[in-house]
Image (cartoon, rainbow, N blue to C red):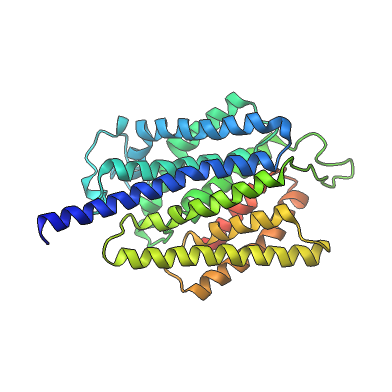
Length: 338
């Protein structure tokens, strides 16, 4: 390959990684809309600030220590301490992609894992305490889990496949959300004296729907961008990933619509919106490796499981999750990975 052609290929690959990173960053707006729309209006300011600080704190701490922990080579359990990402990461960089492009792509993934927690802990979390929670996830929990799977850690050695983060990002965020919501306890008025849950309605389905559409849009960068290249065979792979991602989301949406229509005698709008996200989460692990029919099946299964999963969390575990984040990200992430 001539130098000029190699330079062009490198430019195309780097440009794709940067575009995908921008799409994933825009998902922060989607999370903010979903979480504020599905909760009461008096909490909107708190929700938006938490989403804003998730990204800002996550960016700083991932640069200071997180990237080194995730992509260092110290051991199969822990990458290494590299303050301010000053080390040499040439060996782990995709061919033709610059460190800064790859770094910002990984940064937006880290911020996504942290922001999943915000919705489950909504309406009863002190802002300063949440900032600490977000910092710990961004600096330690996400980078360590990411090292195990994407940084050459022990799960990677076993052949664990999670292409774009059903486990690394979503299940991790969902489990963290479950722990946080369980420790906090339910909102006042969520459970009656008989122990039965009461619906505390969000203030804007319109905002919630807008957030879901933004997330669906951003997910093309989340999954498709994980090729970290657009040259050669990666172009065809990215096309199939886009196709599978969309199919799974549509399948899950239709499945939740039908299940809630039968179960509740009318379609449940907020549950159906969450169904779209459940399909997106579930296909994220295997979007590069399955046929379209399998992507549709994964989406349908994720949608069905979501309805009963959210009910189980709400009625049996009695964990108050205002936006369904544990079901959408935790349960769907585990299902998709399996």
